Structures are given as C-alpha cells and as structure tokens.
Image 1 (cartoon, one colour):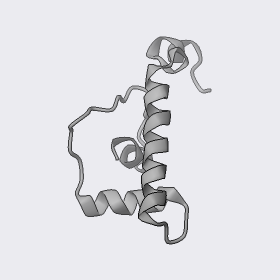
Image 2 (cartoon, rainbow, N blue to C red):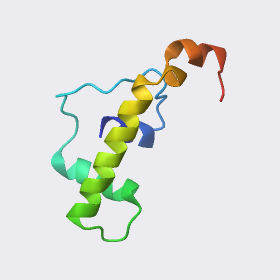
Image 3 (cartoon, rainbow, N blue to C red):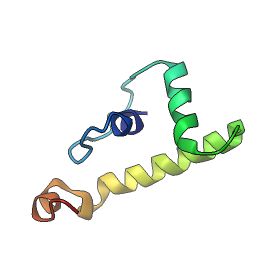
Length: 79
C-alpha cells in the first residue's frame, strides 16, 4: 500500500523505502487501491493475494538491488 498510494499520487519513489508495521490508510482504501492496480475485472481473493505477494516480492528485490540504490540513481538520472 505504501508504494502504490505514493505512485498513484505521482510522488517520487526513488528515495522511498517500505517501512514494515507502519499503517497507512484504511482497509477500505487499501482494498480499493489493490483493485485499481490489479487490473483484473472482479478478481477473486486468491488473485488479489497472488498480486500482493508478487508485488511485495518484486518491490523487496528492487529495494535490495544495487541498480536501484541512491548512489546509482545519481549517476543515471532520468532513466
């Protein structure tokens, strides 16, 4: 939710890092955001669960990647 809500508000995510156990928004807002980004018409709970697990995995890998680090970002601005 932290990434998706910032992305939807068109915030710069280059220096944002997920903060575990930090609650933002309501359950209703979170579900609406997941439904918006899932891009599947009338998804099942299983499809939403798979989407969130995939997204979490990808974002975790991205945060740990040297290619997404602030140091590299300074060298490759605009990419």
